[in-house]
Image 1 (cartoon, rainbow, N blue to C red):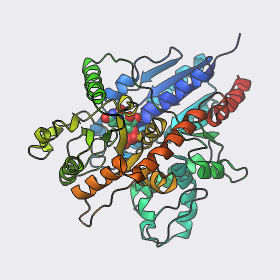
Image 2 (cartoon, protein in one colour):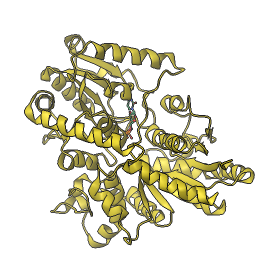
Image 3 (spheres, rainbow, N blue to C red):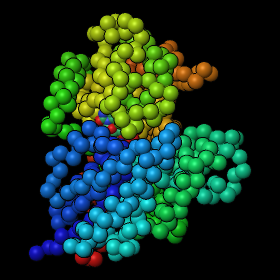
Image 4 (cartoon, rainbow, N blue to C red):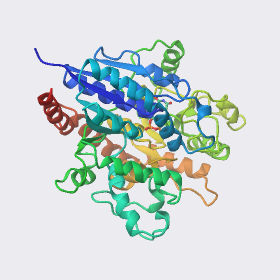
Amino acid sequence: MEKKIHIAVVPSIGFSHLAPILQFSKRLVHLHPHFHVTCLIPSLGSPPLASQTILQNLPPNITYTFLPPVNPNDLPQGIDIVIQIQLTLTHSLPSIHQALNSLTIRIPHVALVVDSLALVALDFAQEFNMLSYVYFPAAATTLSLHFYVPKLDKETSCEYRDLPDPIQIPGCVPLHGKDLYTPAQERSGQTYQSLLQRINRYCSVDGVFVNSFLELETGPIRALTEEGRGYPPVYPVGPIIQAGAKSSDDDDANRLKLKCLAWLDLQQPCSVLYVSFGSGGTLSLEQTLELALGLELSNHKFLWVVRAPSSSASGAYLSAQNDDDPLQFLPSGFLERTKGQGLVIPSWAPQIEILSHCSVGGFLSHCGWNSTLESVVHGVPLITWPLFAEQRMNAVLLCDGLKVGLRPRVGENGLVERVEVAEVVKCLMEREEGGKLHRRMKELKEAASNALKEDGSSTKTLSQLILKWKKLV
Ligand code: UDP
């Protein structure tokens, strides 16, 4: 009888770091039914509802444990979200250690896979005799930047955003310094120092899984996987995205899904623009008003996931569903006037089901990597509206590299004004340029599907590694 291969997985906090690593675990057990994955889940306060929902209906060979939640009051107030996440992980280390100890006493585990913001847990891999891997839930372009930053740091004396020329990271689309990952924007800041420390840890791992695929990011993936360039082995295993939930235990979620799908069923094919800023992206009040009026002005159908405004773009990242009623911030009379034109959903919508509906023809997105891949997999071109983290880099990749996105112009007042919103929506939804984007996105959709077929690039990569693990058991 074939022996079971046991793996332990440590996500970081936040829906968009838990969902991808769980989905990766599902992919492992799908490719190799003799895998058993144990997921040790840290949390800050009680885990968000969406995170709890995705833990329903896991296959029997994926089990999970919630680690004792960290009390938000035990963290300094007003700190950057990345630091907040990392401190939560640091506070969770004793319980991660304890959990790994009791797991490995009973059964040897071949590998420890941690999320890119849970690297502090990697130290335990050696202690418990496990191989160590990072699951990088972002683009290969972003991973390339990680490996390039130490060189850039040595060679540059100013802030990267002040560099006159675009930065040429091997294999990547040229990037202006102002578009780099947020932690690289303030070199004297704590988040930049913590980025440098994280990057350092990558050098000692046994491998990095990146949620991308060769046909999507050929340049960066070729550069990352070239022999002898001194990085740990990089395994492109994507696109790994969530499957739409069949039905959940949560009646409100089921009702919401039916409402969105019933409305989409009434619309023409490819006629609706889906508007969403990820699991926690927020706009300022002024920007929310401009976006609303711009959507109205475009005359195109829209399905908009509205969140209460905030002065911080990642304001709702760890609390997307605890908002005040977001609809009260919309322009006066907007909901009445757009009754036949749009559907407005407060805070959270079933994104996968929406993107896979044939009425959806465009996605105005903050370009989080999960949303980006979900758009690619469902063949929906984008209007790119990056807010924080590495979203600007994703927007450049989508617009300049892959040419499946349009980036609206930000005015001198820092806002994308209503006329610009309307213009870019029209361009995507009705003009020849939008048609070209659609056609290119259809090609990427095909390539995404091929990468995951039995002989596809990502399946082959993962299967080879699984063979290696099997030999160790
Ligand atoms: N999402 C969703 N409904 C929403 C908003 C987001 O299902 O209303 C999901 C979306 O499908 C994606 C994830 O949340 O899987 C957001 O991840 P992404 O990397 O795009 O952005 P982040 O949340 O990290 O900013």
